[in-house]
Image (cartoon, rainbow, N blue to C red):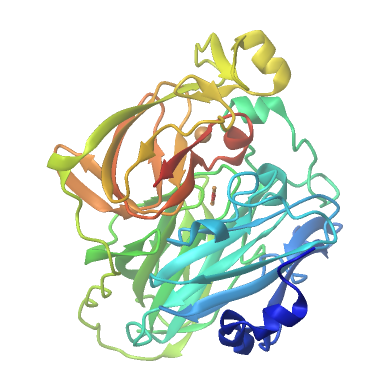
Amino acid sequence: MTGLTRRTFLGSAAAAAALPRLAQAAPAVLEAGPVVKRLAPEGYGEAQLWGYDGGVPGPELRLRQGDRLSRRLVNSLSQPTSVHWHGIRIDNAMDGAAGLTQAPVAPGDSFDYDFALPDAGTYWYHAHMRSMEQVGRGLYGALIVEEPDGGPEVEADIVLALDDWRLAENGDLAGGWDDLHDKAHAGRYGNWPTTNGAAEWSRQVRKGDRLRLRVINTANARIMPLTLAGIEGWSVALDGMPLDSPDPVTGAITLAPAQRVDLIVDVTAEAGETAELRHGSGDGSFTLASFPIDGVGTSSRRPAPAPLPPNPRTAAPDLTAARRMTLAMEGGAMGGMDAATLNGKRVEMRQLVDAGMVWALNGKTGRPDDPMTEAARDEVLWIEMVNDTAFPHAMHLHGHHFREVAEDRLGPLRDTLLLDRRESREIVFAADNPGDWLLHCHMLGHQVAGMVTWLRVA
Ligand code: C2O
Ligand code: CU
């Protein structure tokens, strides 16, 4: 064998430049493995979960805009896995889409993630392999990228990772990770909500405190209508990206799976009372997070917060230059789909059901071999998503944020958009991040049952 030996390698100029890097310590580990934790109330058993670094959720990763995140995923699970850094406009090779951007990481193996964080905001990371089960068992955590100046002045900056578990009678997770009924309907809905892994999450505050709440919907399928009680304020960012101006919270804020909202709120309830983040309002509503009020911080209301500083490369795309296309969303129970292409072959619905593949995008079920489109670098794509199904879907694009176009007006930047049943919505974005990027439903049972495609950016 000629060429590269250790000796010639070390002697080369490139290697000399690389040496300081090689000398660096190995990256910090992020270990995926089993976690045993009681989710249910006292008196019930523990649940067999999977988590990162022994916790559910995994560690809160908090860095500054412009930093690099560097973690060695170590797989101590009994099945292959990968980590996706949801919402980060990331280097494609680090996106963690197992099977597309990297090979699955086998049990006992590891994979080094190392990438820049271009945007400040609230993001999250989660497994991207058999996600319905892996995320469903707890393989997720918050990824917070702080503004360079540390962000707006608040008394507390609090992550609220909301989840929705399906527990069995004994307090363990219910099985049925491959349940076709769930997949063909609304997805795996649970019966037990948690916030930051706790059934009754709470944090003491004072009247008048200003809080930044970073709310993340990590649920498998549940769409969450969020309401505030005893706290008032503004949405300042969606899916990590700052809004042009803070938006006063009046009614419920709908958060679909994978979506985030950053709130800046003031505690208005009186000392001795408890402020709350709630799921819904009125009958059937329940508490997601409580803020018991102990004393008075500031007694006078403060002015509305300034908008968060915009992230780079977020100028509105030129609609006149856009290439338009349609994404037909079909299938599911009561969807009326009669066939779809599976692995390149046209297959009748009956056989699709046998194969557990019941949703399709543009007539294809499962991630197709070919991308739905190939975009030139910086090309503006305008995609009309047509939900011709009887269920809502939360459509997520990797590697980019997009804006919704409605009546020729552009909405806020998002990475996940909720479409109601039988609803059409249009998104537009500049394909400015080269690589292969998934576009899929974030109801994880829909994703695994076929609602996934991808696009290639040159
Ligand atoms: Cu948050 Cu492809 O996923
Ligand atoms: Cu869906």
